Structures are given as C-alpha cells and as structure tokens.
Length: 458
Length: 109
Image 1 (cartoon, each protein chain N blue to C red):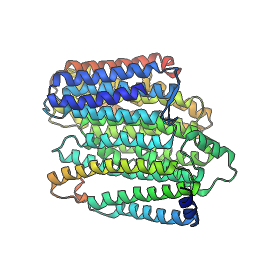
Image 2: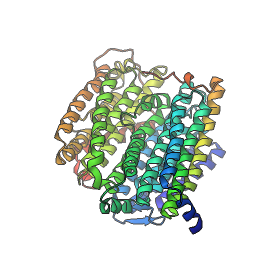
Image 3: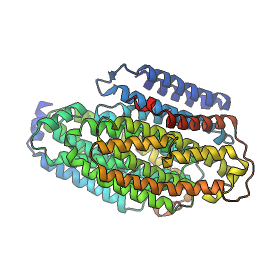
Image 4: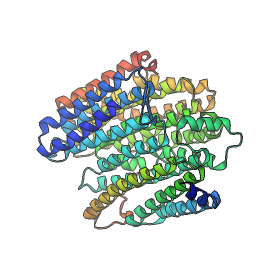
C-alpha cells in the first residue's frame, strides 16, 4: 500500500517538475522515487497484508515481482538520460507515465479480486499506449501506438467478457471465493468454461503468446527503442505474475480443462517465434520475436503449476529483463551512430573498436539463448525442471529443441559483432548509460553463478 | 433494489446473455472488418458496453451488488481509454491526413 502511494506521488510530482523544464532534477527525482518505492516494497517482505477491503494482498510473491519491476524500470530510466538528451520537452512526462505504468503493474501482481485485475491491466496499458506514440511526428511511432491501442483495448474487452461470464457462474469476483465455487460445484455451467477461455485469450494478447502475438513485432519495432525496452520487460514481468496468480489460485482445481489449451499455445508460440526470428534482418524485430519465444518458455512454468513454478517464473522474468535492457541499450547506441540503421549488418565489426559494448551485448544474448554462467541458463533450467516435475516431458523436449533453434539467431548477431568486418568507429558511452549497462551485465553473470539466492526467495 | 431485482429476474438470464453476446459479437466484427479508425473505436465501446449490460443483468440475477460496482469501474476506464485513443487518432490524422487504417502498413516483416 505504501509503495503504491509512493509511486503515484512521485509520478504526479514528475508531472509538475515538467513545468520547470529543468533536466537536472527530472532524472534524479525519478530515480529517487523508484528507490524510495523499492525500499518501501522490500520492507513488506515477510509482512503479508491486505488492502482495499481484501481486494489486493501483499505477500512475498508480489513483493518479489514488484521489486524486479522497480529494478527494471530503474535501469530503463537510467538509459533515458542519453536517449532523451536532445529532446527539449515532455521528458518528465514520459518518466511520469512510466511510473504510472509501474503503478498498474503493482496492482496486477498483488490482486485478489477480478476488479483489481482489470483496473491494474488498464492502468498498466493506457500510459503505454501514450508512450508507444511518444515520438509524435514519426509515422512509425504513430502506427505502433495505434496498433497497440487497438489490440490492447480489444484484448481488455475480451478479458472483461471472460471475467463477466465467470462472475455470472460464480457470483463473485474474489479469487478465493471462485476457487471455493469450483471445488464445491459438481457440474460447472458452460459459461464458466467459456469465461476461462476468454480470460486465457485476453491474457495471451497481453503477454504476447501465439496465436495472439501478431501485434508484438510491429509495436516493438515502431515504438521508440527505449519504450520498447520498457514494454518488453515491465509488461512481461507483471503480465506473467498476474497470469500465474490467477490460474494458480482461482482456476487451479480445473487445470485439466485449460492445460490442453495452454499446451497448444506453448507449441505454437515456440514454433512461430523461433522460425520467424530466424528470418529477421532488423535487430529490433529479432528481439521482438525473441521476446515472444520467451513468453512461450514462461507459459511452461504456468502449465507446470507446482511449487517450483512461482520461483521459476520469477527467476526467468528477472533474468530476461536483465538481458533485454542492455541488449536494447547497446542497440540504441549502435543505431544512433549508424543513422538509425538497426539491421544486423549495423553490428558488423563492433568488437574491434568497441569491445565493451560487444561484451555487454554478448552477455545479454548468451543469457537470452540460455548458455551457462549467464542467468538465462538457470532460468530455462528451473522452468524445465518444473515442467518435468508435473509430467510434461514431451513438451519440455520440444521446448529444449526450440531453445537450440534460438541459439542460431542469437549467434548470427554475435557472428556479426566478432567475426565480420565493418567500418566501425569508436562509440562514446555516456556515463549514466554505461552504469546501467554495466550493472545489468554484472547482475546477469552474478545470477548465473549464484542462482540459489534468487530461486530460494519464492 | 429488491423490487427491481425481482422484476429483472422475471426474464430468464439466457435472454440477457443472448442479447449481450450478440452485441459483443457485432463489436468484434466491427473491429475486425471496418477500415475507419473512428468506427473501430465505436465498436470497442460497443464491446465494453455489452459487457456492462451483462454485468448488470448478472448482478441483478444473483442479487449481488458487486457486478454493478464493476460497471462503474468499466465506465471510468472506458472513458480514459477512449480519451487516449482519440488523441492518438488526432495525432495520426495530423501526420497522415486520414484515419483509414489501411495506411498503417509501414511496419512489416
């Protein structure tokens, strides 16, 4: 509760700071806001509480996810100092919108009532529609923003119909009461099943899982790169936290009904995303497809639905965010020095003149591919162990094959950086930008060497 | 609320469901097949409002106020969403001079 208030207050404060138009206080204020909120969040560890008439509960699960959302947001905000260097106006507003997005993310990691879930998803999405279009005069940004808005609103409406049908059957929005209803009713009505399907569809739109992923590459490509990094991390973390919370508490007793649907979605997601990523020329689009494929792996943790899944999903989302942010960070720098060319060829020969950038990018890519001593390896490992524990052996084998396929396109980029010749020039790394890249890289390696500390949290 | 509830309950809930799901489907069809961005926005509103109607019907049927409270939240959120949607539309119209979504085909691959 305190964390929620703090993030909202700092968001509003940033809106007022915009009036002064002084860049010197905008970034520090945003960082201080995130740090204060992080402190307030961590203080709730092992102190479960509930607020808003028991509509939201703060437990260790939500504290862990909230902390990782705040960390990711902080690294993205640190990147923004350089990204918005030449932009004169509205920078504080962009940061304020990011904080409001985080507010929505907090609601959906800790909801225990469908009303809170809906409000959270909308508070998360509406600022993001604006952020996606924050390059006002770029037609591509316009297009991304409108597509995102359209798909987001459409998905919300479908999710809402699902919630309504579940309410129609069970007469309650409270997750625990829905779970009781499922356990105590012999013959569940058809509308309840239909409701679950619609909720599943709505969620897979939001977390970008196939067959409802088609908006993702366009939106990720058209949005400003920094916003793409923000969308790819925060929305994914919060979306999966909410997804798992809902399906593990309210609908866990009828898992036999929705698990086959999820099974098909996982196969489809892994297949489509990995093959499409192989064909991409642009790095931004490649990272978009890679983000869809990560959604496929994360769904594996939800389908497993045992005591290992919560920890596995948490570890995976954290590892994924810590790899995605530096990858987009390096992309921002390279793109700026190559006249906004973001094709793989733009990375040719990066290692010769800019070894530091190349190393940061390689660690990020290796982590996404799941190579040992990076966090990505254990992320995939824990998810696979959870899935095997629940008996999904065939699905896990398929996922491992998909991961191997993934290595190909990550190595295409590594190959371009280290082996190909290119007219590389020295790229100057701004200080704050460098700090963000360095910390995320170090954390990725640290998580890969000492995975126990994170996985034992949940 | 008791009187109204019993009056609403005279009509079987299935009728409300058929009406609302039909309205919802019309909205979905509109979003999928219309090319004018403003009409698409209207169709999304139609989808949200059909859900509102269904929630109110269920709420009266179960004699539980929770559903009607949710309707208020949906109205507020829908208003916020449309405000943002329309401003995105204005931005598009300024740059493109049109609100036809066929023009949105720069991002491909």
